[in-house]
Amino acid sequence: MGALAVQTYDLGVRFGDFQALYGINLEIPQGSFVAIVGPNGAGKSTLLKVLLGLDPGNLRDGEARLVGRAEVFGQAPKALPASWVGYVPQVKSFDRSFPALALEVVVSGLRRAWPFSIGPREREVALAALAQVGAAHLAERPLGRLSGGELQRVYLARSLVRQPKLLMLDEPATGVDVVGEADLYRHLEAYQRQSGATILMITHDWEAASHHASHVLLLNRTVIAFDPPGLALRHECLSRAFGHVGHAHDAPVIR
Amino acid sequence: MLEALQLPFIQRALIAGVLVGAIASYLGVFIVQRRLSFLGDGLAHAAFAGVALGLLLGTQPVYVAVPFAVAVALAITWVRERTSLGEDTTIGVFFAFSVALGVLLMSMRQGYTADALSYIFGSILTVTWPDLWAVVLLGVLMFLLLPLWGRWAYATFERELALADRLPVLRQDYLLAALIAVVTVMSVKVVGIVLIAAFLVIPAATSRMLSPTFARMTLWAVLIGVMTSLLGLFLSYYLDTPSGATIVLIQVALFLLALLLRQK
Image (cartoon, rainbow over all chains, first blue to last red; front, top):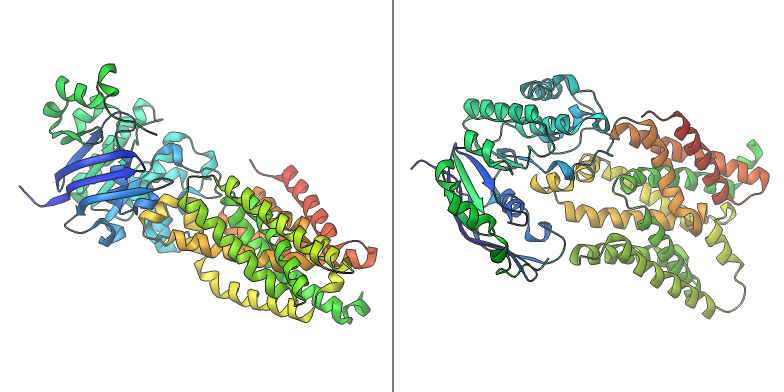
């Protein structure tokens, strides 16, 4: 087995009385394209945020506790250079009321601060990243005038502009039409071919996941399966992950 | 007009007005985009309690009000970070506490309370040298903190991305809250307690409607804050109207104009 991008040791996260994640042991090889699949409240976003190196207190409002350990490229997520990781948050969390041009959003990914003005070099790099995802024409457009799919692409460009070794996306296909989704996979695969980066992507679409991903991580507060798509998406694994009515009540879901 | 400029109290009022207008509007852009308008309200009332305490102790009220308001600002931020109570609820509790404390302290004070009214509605006649020095000091501090604009703006834009990029977002929250508290107290003499929240928010809200970028929003807000303070102070002197109300009414007029001119 080659080098690992992500490794976790009995990782768990607790929000007050609610065990959001427990006993997560993962070994994700570098260069893999992992689709993270699971029901709502399965801890998918929480897992990504832990790998981003967010402190437990920032995972969600209120008290949170982290047990176990996660490593990204052999280091604690917080110790990793921020530029190694690209992150695309959920589209529903995007704030479109902020006065910004698409180009500024991309430059913020480069600078890790908001640009007061943009130099010629930065402009060039940011435009190239936008062009990479077919959004060069959106550069001077205000955020408030972008559609969901367009906004998604700008955020993707923002995450790619720093040439990350690990790219994490939280439901990037939600709110995007079928053509947009196909485009998204095309851009991700092109970037992966060019860079050898590892991609972790939360998705609700198993069908697409099975076509594009090298691995599927079935998650329901713990790892149900982490295998190539054909194995992970078998009926028994899916029913264990998504449960049926009788099953879902076993777990104390206090939210 | 020129003879008025030679009066020391007018000079003090103008310098304080311009500086406070600039600083309040600068912080205002973060208040507006972070949806913290109510924090300004809460802190204005903390300033009221602080001023009441200062008057009771017989010191320069600003010396007592600044630490008091900063303490309330930090406490609001702390409770907000540590609990799942909403921003508005947390501020509401401290708001009520401050008003109750302020009223209690005012009632304990013997004798004449006319000076207290100048704090509530603002009065350019009453800007003292210690008031002015405090404002100048804050101006210098804000100038030194200008390089942080990019990081504050980034965390304002998308908190989670800033956190993922290892920005000290929590520390920023505390620092911003404390600065808003200080500028609130400094603005008391110029605009008065009841209007500070508007004074903090309206220039930024106006420039938000006219600006496609956050950088321009910031510049326009500061410009609007300075110009309306100047104009309002002059008008209030010549028309003999309360300075705070005059300034805020001019700001609202500009806001309405921007509303008509705004780009979609």
